[in-house]
Image 1 (cartoon, helix red, strand yellow):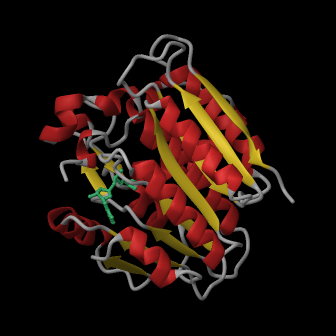
Image 2 (cartoon, protein in one colour):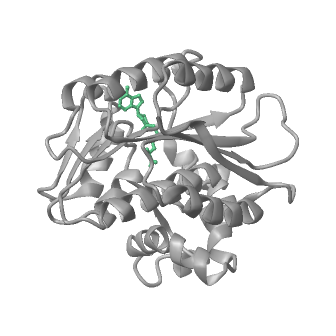
Length: 290
Ligand SMILES: C[S@@+](CC[C@H](N)C(=O)[O-])C[C@H]1O[C@@H](n2cnc3c(N)ncnc32)[C@H](O)[C@@H]1O
């Protein structure tokens, strides 16, 4: 396993995924009843953008860096606010300025969930790579609501679904180092849905190998899981072979507010994050409500 998220933290793909996650959590937080977040590929939780890995790629500059410099309409600003607030919260005043940057640290999905959840909510984070998991435990700190687990995220779907709260979100965000990742993800998602059909599932995927993406979507369609939203975020108009030209999200059982929210927020972000001025986002149903 070579994948290290520290190289990519805060890039366009993290922006898309974290904005969607933040909107889902904002929706779940509208009701007092507790919810659970199950993040089965958690990563390190907190990323130092002045660190070696982030510096080497500089990907964050085209992601969170570009967002912080952009101007948005009041409506879009409001939709992005929970995520942006969580980003600002991990940076003390002057952290970024000391490096001549707008910020120094970027929170991954576990810290975003930690920031947006309430005392009654519960958080499960799986990470299999020991040093990454140690970093995650340190970043999460003492929080009785959160558990960092050394278990394989795919196995966790069997062991922890359905959660006792019966409401919440499962984030599936594997590293895609293996050509079989799409197939494994489809199988795991279908099986997880069988265990817990009312949960929200947010699944991130890269748009690079278009055939693999199509096969994955077809597999989910064939499984006839109703209420599955597909979000395709293209960073550029022309695809380059073997380069990440965009990313997608499949969201099963999305909150009813999410379609409009993501059309607006990701539509505005596509303009800011596009590499050739031709970014675009499509938010549509892969399978509609039954
Ligand atoms: C794309 S990164 C996660 C980023 C994180 N979700 C975020 O948004 O900040 C994928 C992570 O999954 C971990 N990982 C890979 N295979 C795993 C598995 N089977 N179970 C749990 N974690 C795994 C990797 O070590 C890596 O840290």
